[in-house]
Length: 286
Image (cartoon, rainbow, N blue to C red; front, top):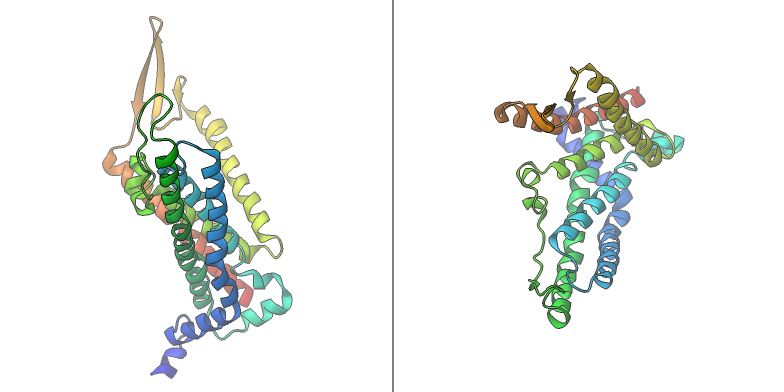
């Protein structure tokens, strides 16, 4: 049965397990050092925040800021190296000659860079964040129990990423920032296959150029196509001035259409990058 399964040229579970074991054997030192290294960086940053704020260090907003920025930087750096072997001729030949299909290699890369990378960073973050928040609360209890104006300062809770950004109802519902992280990871994974050298920097420049081009397209093209007085804002607005007063008429999609459509666009972008990465790997093999 196993031999029959291995003849499948697209996906074989036993062959994929061997590929994962091979990847782990060659990179386990780097992965095992990742948690203490990331935790040390977060400890250093949050220690700096504690020293800079005497009244309310490490509130849930700062914890969320630290988590998402750290996740984005570390995740994109790591994702840009997941297929880095292709940038070196000798390593690239060895990697391409590994007995696994392009789809299995893609899944192996996504497993380590996207899934395990996210889990490892989250573990490292909370290993550093939980004790630092407790230290911050004890500092507040000893030094400053009230704001300068007399308002009491309560202890800071541990921020939980699965509850979304504090005070942001939309992010609490659909976790927009977390989805953006997976979009960036997909882009940088594609960049690691597409660019031979300096994949991180080249992908970063490409992403920034794309964002600027999108903003320019919306501002200079879409805006000029609208009737006079209409402006591209969420939602599209018609500004009317009458009797020295400003009135606004708006056009918006129904929540039953706009919500699912926006969610579909967000969730649909990462698979587009993954599919493009798959075909780029397949092209390299050919």
